[in-house]
Amino acid sequence: MARYDLEQWVKECAELTQPDSIHWCDGSDEEYRTLIDGMVKDGTLIEMNQKTHPGCYYHRSNPNDVARTEHLTFICSQNKEDVGPNNNWMLPDEAKEKGRAILKGSMRGRKMYVIPYLMGPIGSPYARAGVQVTDSPYVTVNMRIMTRIGTPALEHIRKTGSFVPGLHGLADVNPERRLILHFPEEELIWSIGTGYGGNALLGKKCFALRIGSAIAKKEGWMAEHMLIIGLEDPKGKVHYMAAAFPSASGKTNLAMMVSSLKDQGWKIWTVGDDIAWMNIDKEGQLRAINPEAGFFGVAPGTSVNTNPMAMETIKRNTIYTNVALTKDLQPWWEGIETPPSEGMLDWRGNVWDGKEKAAHPNSRFTAPASQCPMISPEWESPEGVPISAIIFGSRRSSVVPLVMQSYDWDHGVFVGATMGAETTAAQTGAVGVVRRDPMAMLPFCGYNMADYFGHWFEMGKRIKKKPLIFRVNWFRKSADGKFLWPGYGDNIRVLKWILERVQGAENVQDSPIGYIPKTDALDLSGMNMPKETLEEIFRYDKAGWENGLKEIEKFLSTFGDRMPREMWNQYESFKARVQKS
View 1 (spheres, helix red, strand yellow):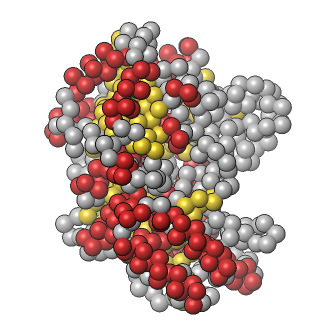
View 2: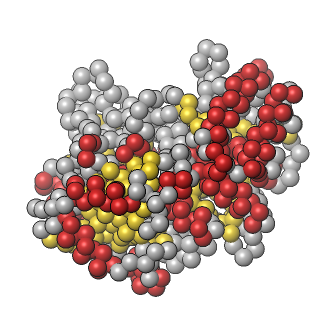
View 3: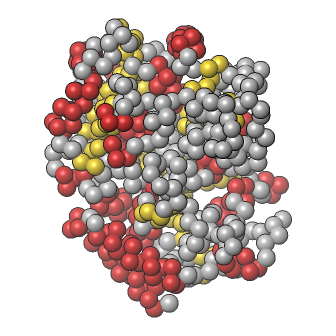
């Protein structure tokens, strides 16, 4: 990792932004309380109903600053080819010149907070430190929830001599003067003109994924946009899986799933809901840590029925952003499954008239992971958890079956690399459009994605105990637009089949796209699923896959000569199987 002098770097940030004062965060309860009280006093936060939601606070962000802004997010490297067509590129010097022009003097009248933070369990050889400077107390308290700030981070920096620096300034929160800049060669982050979590909590997507993925490639590990769960079987043995889903596609629901087979003794443990850092141990086993300490989840659609564990987690010590607020100061959003109340304020602060959504579709909650009732006893294990299976999933209303298994690791890389997803409100732009989102990393890979695919192929050569790779799709619909699979707690049935495959069960049939379950392989006990529905969930759609071939070839071709030969070999094999079917 790059080496910086911490005090000198903070001094340079202060000279540029000119804050009135500087506060070094220690992560204490007293500090958190002081920050919260100050924001309640100045209106940045609203204290919520402390009887129903103790320790919870509410925040409204600027209406122009409610989601990740991918078109304003740049990877700044000397060579454009290293950045790839999957990223926006800018020369480092040009980026810093533009950034300095906006940041110069931008913290006058404000306090600068210096946040040393640790990504990963304390004492883990896989943990990394970062230091974020910011003029946002809102960002500061969110970083305290999402990472381990203060002493553990400073001790890690003293021990290793390295950290990833991140400069964040709100400036005037103007979309015309907004930049999210990543400098992988310097392992540096600048975020300007935004307070939205995905852009401003620099430990999250910026460090853990964009800069993290570049470091991981260089050092031979993996920084992935993946949840981590433990699947406990009836005998009490836990098997761990990592799964990649695009934002707002049921990822948090899966990470905190309450099993519909709990009467049989099947249970899910949550290790992480969003990001996995995976390293190969001395025995050749892939091990994963959750670098985060909190959940930054999408509120709409979350309810006692869809995700009871999330609802329990966010009852206390949570910061809500851009949800609706009832008259008695409780959070509300579409899909919460309680009726809206009279006089409720929408996410903009206006009395809700029922004409538009009360909560923003990308409204969020930030909550400590330790509060989750199903948090794994191993979630802070320094050595990480062993990964038996990797799952790729996305929202597709047609073509993609409920579950399939790749033939081998390289085929699995192809399956993940060519995954298509329907866009959601977590991204700015149109909703419901199918786009390629390889490994759910398209917005988060900090370098040329062709090289990223090459890194996956290379990791496969080094991992002795390779996880099996699967593709799932909970969202396939019938001709009349109804979901074919109930999802939520019943997804345990798919995970059970995946585990059976990990353990060597021969309950599969071959298909042009990979192995799929035999007709009677899924445990459907207690379900009233017609045979025709099950057949439709797994129906091979030759025309759909033939159309997909054209899209896949077009997507892979955008990377030119940089694309690994292994990927084209997989494509040609896939094309031959589809055409022959």
